[in-house]
Amino acid sequence: MIDVLAIGAHPDDVELGAGGTLVVQKALGQTIGILDLTRGEMGTRGTAEIRDQEATEAGRILDLDVRDNMEFKDVFFKEDEEHKMKLVQKIRLYRPKIVLTNAEEDRHPDHGRAAKLVEEACFWAGLKRIETVDDSGNAQEPHRPTHVYHFIQSRSNTPDFYVDISDVHEQKIEAYKAYKSQFFDPTSVEPETYVSSQNFISMVESRAREYGQRIGVQYAEGFTTRGFLGVRELGGLV
Picture (tube, rainbow, N blue to C red):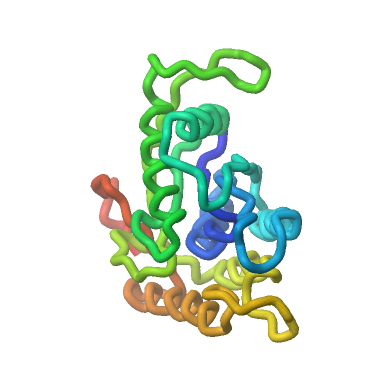
């Protein structure tokens, strides 16, 4: 069982949006993992094989308990029964308490589509009349994550809550910079993209400072949720 499973459309989505939060949860003694939906093979820079290597290195930096990939077709995956059922199998395999996933609305169409796919698959995974088997052919038990939260990506959506990542911010930076083929590299001869500019990385780091300032800490990550939030006692607030 994985306590917190982050599911992203592409390798590097989770590192950028929720890498710090995963490390925070790990420090609390929880198990953490990343499930990438695609290998990011349609990206302008690098190759799927390079992204595989970079994802492995980023996972090492984050000290993940598991990293897996659905190998859905980048750009072409759909919110259909076939894709949802495959994802249901993974959710029932890892049985996460909390799922973190892409922004519900964002610049890249894959992000919003992934968010909907994950939301529905998490619900379907809890329905006992939907039957699935594991890789060995054994029937899987239903499982529905308690919470599904969406991290913030290119669009500055208003978060419903923030996680203080001040103590682990440098580790988050190191993790997403493992994707050397994708982000700013002054020596690269590949075409410049939206995420490869220095301005993009500056935006990510500035947002962490802005979110931190909103809650009185140095750095934070923001999340949205379709559900309602509650605390057991007021002292649990930052």
